[in-house]
Image 1 (cartoon, helix red, strand yellow):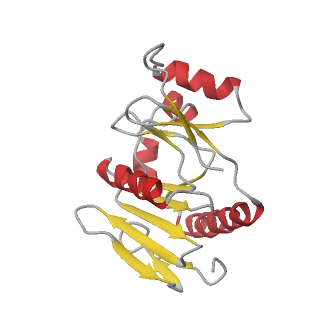
Image 2 (cartoon, helix red, strand yellow; image 1 turned 180 degrees about the vertical axis):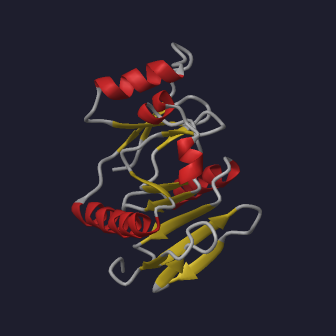
Length: 191
């Protein structure tokens, strides 16, 4: 099942607090909001994708616990991007000093910050075109490094600031380079 987009703007334009309240009142529904203010209802993942998401998050958490360089977030976390969109990447990471600069209220709600890194793991029903547009939106909104993992095609697309998208076929590992110092993601369990 793919995501469903609702344009409520002709009826009501939800402000940030109203969108946050909508999400809180409907905890069983995963919402995102694009830069045009349209509400996107995200489909739940299947078992294989959910397991892969969990494994990926664990790798980031273990690395971050060892380095203490920032904060790791799962797909339940919604970020308010500079363009006004509210997005929930499968994995996100923010440098500690950037996270610490937010107020307690900003941290509690949908943090108004673009993560330094995001990862999206495509579900079998996801549209590649939609996923690529989301990745470009991340880069256009100050995210430094973004990985799109397409298990079905055994492909990874790497997005970086001011660089062309790099496409890797069946890589065995990915390096966090200068954004995630010392982080290496082993992809052998993903394929």
